[in-house]
Image 1 (cartoon, rainbow, N blue to C red):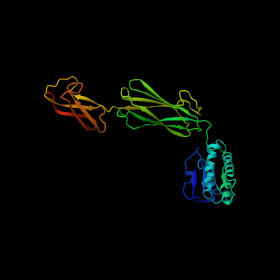
Image 2: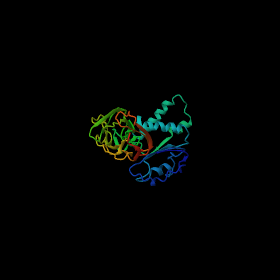
Image 3: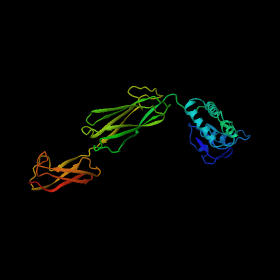
Image 4: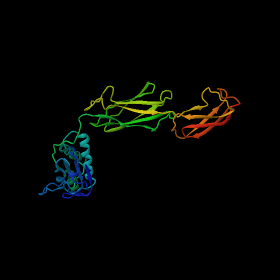
Length: 333
């Protein structure tokens, strides 16, 4: 938890962060970094400094408090904290907080070796004080842990029908453990309603924390209509990333999606029926009754080449449902 603003040793931060007894964080204790003035000064005779109030509560509050014992100046406190974050998350990963603070000062010494240190440097770099055990380690992981979730899968567009030649299937992949940069194998298997399938696969860069992965899926009019089952897997079937806990169970998920048809079918007259009236109204229906507004083009003729003098055509703009065309059309050519 990092705070930036006005502060003091006895009264704490100018922004209310509530009493630590009210944090309700048993078992999950943060390191608090105070980027302000004097809030790290724990060297007074009394025992009521703000940092002690933060770390003293039992089963609540923080496990450590880092801040300057003197005045805090920008941009120096910012420089220190950015360096400290790099030591915690990268160069000093899995080391104690005391070691990471020493590495931070060593790095700042090197980057400012050609600059004469003034009191502002001293108070904001060497003056950063830790209230807590320097041997403590901030939560870290020895190995990666890859996770997929059914709740984090979606398509663009959200509704897919055969009017689209392709669509994007997207999902999030999480790494709850140690970051890694080596490439990793991802596979998407699409099972069609008729039981056939197709597979998409690719390698992606290592996942530091989370990443959104996209596959462009081709619509196949002959097989896609209906419920499609998408099986998504990462680092499978052959695992190349040694994980902390589960190598298989959370590396594969399924996503069900219905692909609808945007086509229309004749509903009246019936196929091969005989109409006894000299005129009639032709009716068609969209396969998807909830189809959005589209423009439909119709032709009718007495031969399959659509080349006779009887040929008639018409277009209509309509939402899904039953469409009436060539109303009361004369059927005698």
